[in-house]
Image (tube, rainbow, N blue to C red; front, side, top):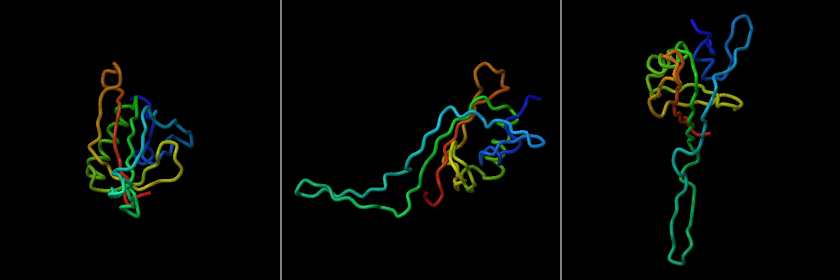
Length: 139
């Protein structure tokens, strides 16, 4: 069996490296990451005089994050797939997640189904995994 980057999906989602007997294994390689608001939080009211009056629509603004992991082992891909289907049941349950390079965990849920496809010409032994999550309750 190929070496695994992670020992559990909890380690992957919270950004903690896995390993045996205290040996740290590198986190999966992130090839794509972005974040932003899920919706525009601004009310805009144009006035006859030509200016636009604005105000906040919400007191808490939910954020969306997009992540792509590359070259995950089949074992790691299966851990994520099982987590998506059995633990959080798609986007119905929230979970603690650490942003790549971020400090501390935030509560998120999957905003769409996770996408899986083979990495390069790996004969289905390495995978790209791409997902979108949204914060629960704003940040």
